[in-house]
Image (cartoon, rainbow over all chains, first blue to last red):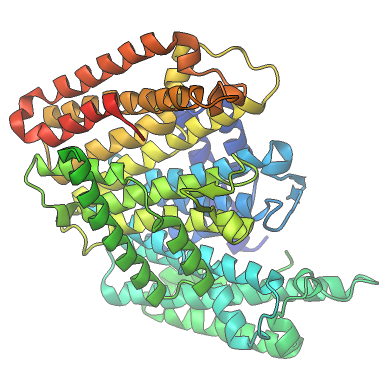
Length: 301
Length: 301
């Protein structure tokens, strides 16, 4: 296994243990039992935990320990998990399975899935702002603000809205490459960029270091999304009788559809190069983040 | 009109103007137009704005101006509005009308209503933590934490979960008075208490002043809920052919059903007395909050 995948696995183990502990603590404080069970189903269901890894590694550039970065990393993962729970709902993507297990609305019911997502979003902001978690109120308020903007109407939720509208509203103008890039940078990129910025906030980074991590995060988010699209397109092209991917099948314009696979690969390579270049000033300390970007060029899952 | 109702109306005007401005600013920063329109539909649809009034009046006890309390008051109202948008969904209460206008899912569609709620929750935390809004990071982080706890799994969302489960899951044990009080204090009381605590946080109140406002908020929340239940029971009893209220019709145990109207009225009076007693130390400055509590004994709507 590559060093990146080992580090990613370590980060996942740490953040899962922390989340399990925080959810148990919350239940002891009065979460109704059925809601508590559904929250565990939503949060402790595996996953790459790529965003927490980015928080840890960005913070480490400034000497912040993994332990000190845990609440912010966990909060970001709660936002990611809530978005999946709501995306899976019948009114959204109508998915019954996620990572081989029933989705929350399927395992429980729709009202529980809506409330699990709502509770997880609140929990993220609770974790990130809790007085005992970070001594410095400036850090807590800064993390809150960055996460709120990245996950809201001009970030993740706005991107999800554009995505659903594109597939369902009649008489949408044909999407251009710029449209798709904007949608993807909102839906997926904003939270990945926020992960890197949150590491800088935890580390009380200078403005220029914070800007460098933001640039890295933006290109990494772009690489992440293109590599996802390539996996979707190339994976399904190999299946007989299913020549197009899920997005294309849903009638949505995709970057691969507009660019073709070779040009999309070039785009991916350029994004990886730009992401790694942004970290130049950090020297060899940035190796784990550079490896994360390079991994996007050789993803198998 | 009573002085309380005049002050409530003033608070509503101020918070609505502020929310309209903030939503316009967010749209200028990139909210997709259809989402922006649905957000306005959800937020700028009237309503008593009782929670913002409580933030303003609690903060004023410590010399905090209405202008300085606006972001916290608006954030609390965004949380309240998001909960209504999600509660109205077909999978929750399935309501098509709210204040005489179509609910968000009816005016748009279900996915938009889910995303409007999600975006509004994020917007609340964005407003409350924005660096320019309050100079003091300790205040911003404190407000965030109080609001997150009150609106999450051990607060508003947890109460909503208990309420839906009580009406729908088979073989629920019969609810006791204590069960109903707990459900209502979570579902409605927590946010009302948070409004009063947020005023204290804005005013950098002493621990004892903050505790007094919390006690006031808890009894006020209880009075608010009982007066709501009485309106429901007494209002509908007057209608021929509709002898019971909405909750009773839904097969849910209600406080009125278990206590009877006279005992519920006594309970309401005791809550109002306890709420006003908690403010004793503030003297005449607390008159607007005392009037708010007394109003619960003579609500007509």
